Length: 88
Image (cartoon, rainbow, N blue to C red; front, side, top):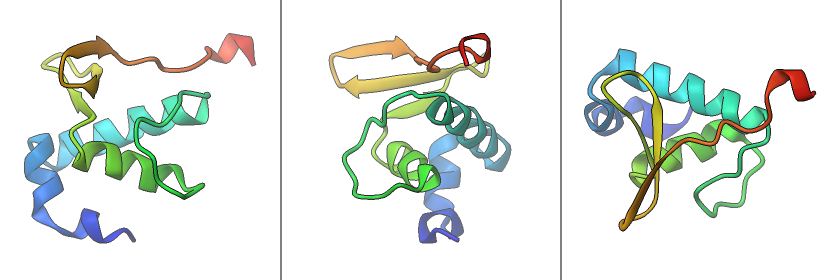
């Protein structure tokens, strides 16, 4: 298991364990569908990518449960979830 998931920091950053779990699941689906990582790390493990995106404040859940990205501090956009399942 990733060390970051054992700490309360990531839980507090997301607003609780349920929101953390939801954010991880939604982002993992997006990455598995082809969305590009928002962090530069040397790994093929999508879970490590998602955890680093959360820890670096690149992604979060809005009040309606939609994943929002922050690629830079000047721009906020809704998350690109990659190609739809119909395209695969």
